[in-house]
Structures are given as C-alpha cells and as structure tokens.
Image (cartoon, rainbow, N blue to C red; front, side, top):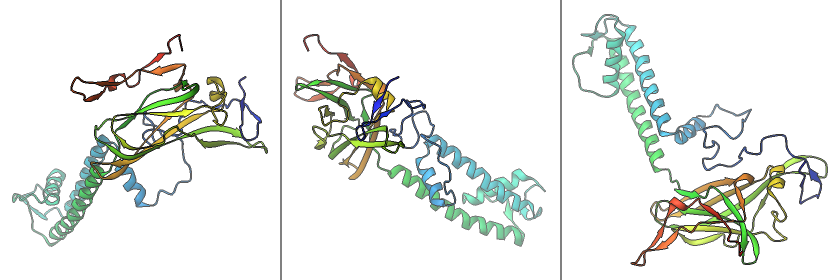
Length: 315
C-alpha cells in the first residue's frame, strides 16, 4: 500500500477510500465539465430569491431559454384560467375555450394591438389591467436578467490539459501553460497555484490541507499570448520527493487561479483550472507553440497547445 506522509506531522496517511479523480476545483466552478456538482451540500437555505437569481445567471443558455419558455407558457395559462372564470367576459371568444383565453393573454401580455377579442365585462377588464401591470414588471425583470447575463465578464483563458515535471535550469520544475483565446491583452495578470491534499493531524483527524506553491513568476503586466507557469521543486517545495503514487495516495490536486483586467471590458476576469496526479507528466516537455512569421509577427498555434513530448536522451 502506498503511504502518503504529512509534511506537518510526518505521520503516515493511508490511501483514501474515495476515488482520487473527483476534482475540488474546476474551470466552471461548482459544476464540473460533465454537468455534475462537485459535492452534495445539505442544509442549504433555499428561501432567498437571490439564490434563484444566481441560478438564472449561471445557467447555460439552452437551459435559460427553455426555462423562459416554460415560464411564459405557465404565466399565460394562469391568466387564461382567470379569464375562463367569466365565460362571457371576452368578446368574440368561443365560450369556455381555453385556447382563445390563452391567445388573448398572450396578446395582452405582449401588448399586441389586435382587436378580434376584447374584454367586455368589468371582471375581464380588471384581469386585463392586472396582466398589463404584471407584463410591465415582467418585461423589466427579463430585460435586466438578459443584460446581466450578457454583461457578465468572463475570461477565455485555456490551460494545458496536462502539467509536466521536467528538469529546468538544473532543478526539477513543475510547468503548465495558459493562453488567452481572445487575442487581446489581460493587464496585471496574476496566477496562484495551491497544492491540496489529505493529511492527518497529531490527533488523528484527517482533513484537507492547502499550501500555496512558490512560482518563478506569479505576475505579468501584460498577458496576451502564452504563459508558461513554473514552480521549482526544491527542498522547500511540498512536491519535493513526491511520485505519482504518493500524490494519488494523498488525493492531491493542484488548483490554479488566474486573474487580471481585460483591456476591452475594463473589468476583472477570473479563470481557474485544476490538475490531478494523473494529469501530470514526468520527464516530458511541452511542444513549442510560438513561431514568428516573415514579417516579424508572432503566432501562437493552439492546435499544439496541449501536446507534450519525451525529453531528448541527451537530457
């Protein structure tokens, strides 16, 4: 059995029973690439409308439009039911026809200037007035939500699928790459890398610990093309002496957070990624993605962005 040693206490930590491939951090936040949440949270307070607003903002566009369509149908069906309570309240509508009442609700809610069906009773006019007022509030709410979804700043930064550990300047070094897909510049970009693992305290309590890795360069004033992030693995590094098996035994994970100011949006953007032990390649290096055209312009070939290759034998 592979034993993971806790750098704080030196006590051995047995291999965890859970699957080490579960990520604690993903590029999409609380939901991973397969659409499943990282963890199940019990005891949540779901009574606040702000949580519903947050869910609407982060929902995929397909889910958002599907939910909006369902909401539109439900609202008009509810008002159609109110109109049916007064069967003779709508002129030129078939007696007891839900479809006619539904279409009249759609026309009223959308302020469509049709005149085939009109309210003729006091009750129908009251419902029309209420629906018109609701339509004004509904339009304002949906307009605000659409604007909030479109105006949310987000980064189009990609990270290499793998990280590599390779000799660099005479010392083993952890490397991974990041690139800005927009092609513009991210100002005052900063990156932090946290090493997360399960460790055992002196009291025998197993908990998850986080250590920030010291990077060769953690900030750059301009991030436009490609950025190779380096961490030197020396005696002070928590990765010193680690192997694939020891990292898996600790349920280790490298969490990456990159932030900066988008020069176009003039707003702070964030991008995050994580590397599991099986994402790390030992004694391999990244394929070069930078080239220079005859006119002197630099080109980043993202088709080879994730590619690695073994080290030459002379190294």
